[in-house]
Length: 264
Image (cartoon, rainbow, N blue to C red):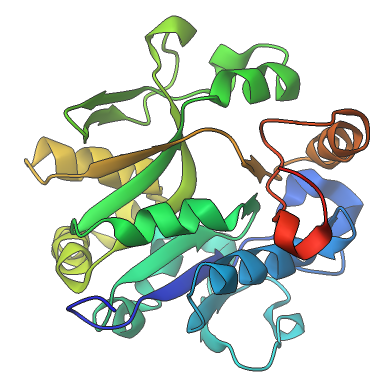
């Protein structure tokens, strides 16, 4: 139990995921299938295994298909004309009342990563992967074209989200998984309230985090070593399915051995 209330989770699942092609033609991205289950089901199991049972989802594209019992729903009616931070603001009331783990809708992760975030008492904490490079080298022909800057000093982020950085200068990659206390959300929301509508609609999370860092807001960082994946393209699904079948101990296997009998 946290002193500000029991931890919740929020899954940001409003986008279509057009790079998945026909996979998302008739369903939202979080309902794409990986290793026999939807991304949403993998996330819900990871969160609940880590002790988070109170979960909300921000819906958008074909949102009515996300209709699981026991979840709380928020809707982003302008999902096609806005970015992920706009979806985050759709759940203001959820974020302002209790500590909350926030997850992108297109990632899967081991419950241990959630547990690490829950242990942090900081206002804003993000998880980052120390083993990112091996994954990026398999996902992209040129990892440096997709990777973003990430520098940490004494457990605090000093730079995040800039493109075109030398790979050797990057100490990790942000997962799309973070935790906010009500105080942390208040700091974010105060900053967002000062932005005009057009800027807010285009804003992504790493740009938001860097803006907060520039204003001397402390953003804490928790390192992890693999055990997660991002599903951004059909070739990601093909790669992960292949790794699961052919590599006995793959560093980015997110599955919980207690649930599926496989060793992570």
